[in-house]
Length: 489
Image 1 (cartoon, rainbow, N blue to C red):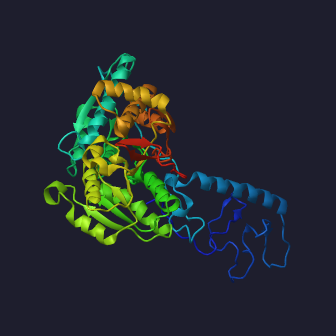
Image 2 (cartoon, helix red, strand yellow):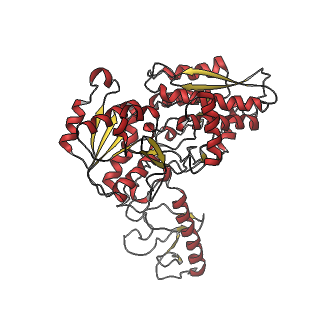
Image 3 (tube, rainbow, N blue to C red):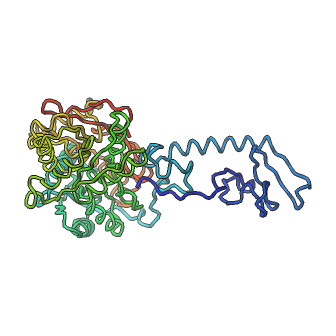
């Protein structure tokens, strides 16, 4: 959900100025009196349609005070301020034509997620304890999970960051220590892990995780135990919409990647009928939600959704049911929102059955496992991706080289964001000291951070809104920055 919109009443779209408080009026009767005839009410000062302040006392025929010059000047200042605020308040990089009800309402009655979250509770005056090591927690799917292929690079990225921080002196000579807990993907298990981090391990902050449902549960417990969490892998757009001031996310979300793909698919390529092929879990549902709604807002047919089971290898390894639906629908293109292994098999089956329509996918397919499984069928697949390594080669390539030398593989996105997220938390600890409340405030003050993934630009709910990019499979490898996008979000 990009933003919640309450459609204003007939007259609330008019701008009025309350002279007593110099604020925008929110009353319904801005331009009409109690008789519902044109004019202004007798009991207050208002601005007429020409920008003049008019005061009526009793009988309308009585004296009026016209403050035209001041009225016009103030009106223009506020008008320009409102326009500037609109431009800055497009939550989630939402383009104007993809805003909810944009065709019917010029301005929503209320905007959400456009004011900074604050923590106003006690705790910032707690003295710093004497510790031997400074503990940082990592919650990631490392085993017994279909997302382990993403969790392990997260672990490696965080390990690299802590090793480098300790080589640089740690925290006042004390080493940082990584405490790792596995995110199994079981419903509610992440809650227990956050409790363990908070009270048993006594970590100063937590990094992770990836699974949308489990991360939502984890941050609700973090709210109760009052521990900062920096998320580096969950791209669920709704994660930061919980208004929990302890959660920070340094990776762009699926909303931004969906907007970018939607504009490319519909506006640049001119496709009309698009089918959605997605996982039947939270990642699939919430990942494609903005595309489903955005298609309608752009005047296109509502996409047909085809789901696959997470345990497809046991129940439907060849995706026979889904392939029959695709052959029946014959879309112009498909949007694929799946994990790397599943996406590889799906693309392979699509091409084997003679379907040649273009395939657009999520960032999780930008992984060597996708290329290994799909083989030649992956050629031409276009995926959204949070950043372009070629644009930031000066900072990314040295990290990529160090990572490859240490782990024997390329880092891709999740390792890089984990590395940056760990460094952001380390910097916050060094600035604030060993106090979770002050560490949380230090993270909140990092509105901009330059890491190996480029420039992190945090919005008011502490989510990275840096522009995303696209990747194309060419000659068995990923080509970043292709195709050339007319608009990125």
